[in-house]
Length: 309
Image 1: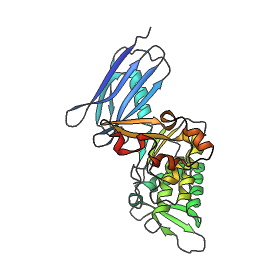
Image 2: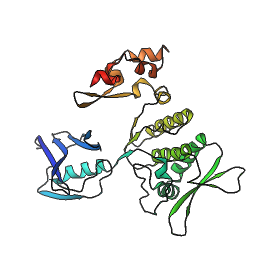
Image 3: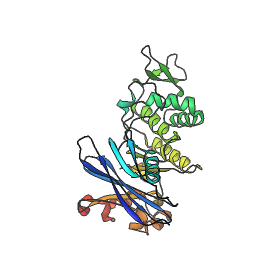
Image 4: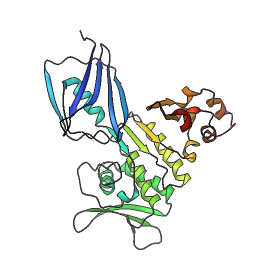
């Protein structure tokens, strides 16, 4: 018989301070995990998940070294916990990706690596491109197709190795003899490659993109949303989160796809738009106005900073 129990797991970081990294509640038919993902300074976002299956009690405590947790949960940690819960937690957290892409970071050379992981800011973009080309050619083809929607003249995107074995990107255009280098293409082209490569990278079950509209034409933002919907429609379960202040992006999504985040009494509040105001669905469906107009009007107090702090 599996008993209900609640566990608070702390990590011992380099400063020898103890920091809570997970709370787990185990019941007979499910395991609930709640973990603080440190995003910006003291701002904390919680990752909640429920594993609907029995988790058997281990005979003894095991020790797991977590030396490479992905951003934003960057902790050098030593976690002691019942081994079945550790396996579920470590596997779930390892799939989280949070991106705040900066075209300047994407212009740098890449270092050859087996994983081909791009960083949250966009470093190692050439390594990700090389990984997708070699390991997931269909995902790479989808990436290039979407980039062409932003930069129609781009025929091919190739990865070459410099004399020092570092990786660089080249963008070939029709009518040009020499390709553009990653230092010569526009911010919009480079940023679109970052976004689409990260979206179509099959690894990672939860990906978050911060303000993807920066440096992008409104039509490119729509292509980004369409790519997100395509990935979410695939059989493999995925979750995508996008933070934005773009009217073009908000007006291209449905009310069901919008979640409002605001501050209240020092806490971060998160609610689906239709939970705050169910009438928004009819307002939008009947064409009485755009979602951006509604959110900018102040009718929803949660969207007005001065009223929610």
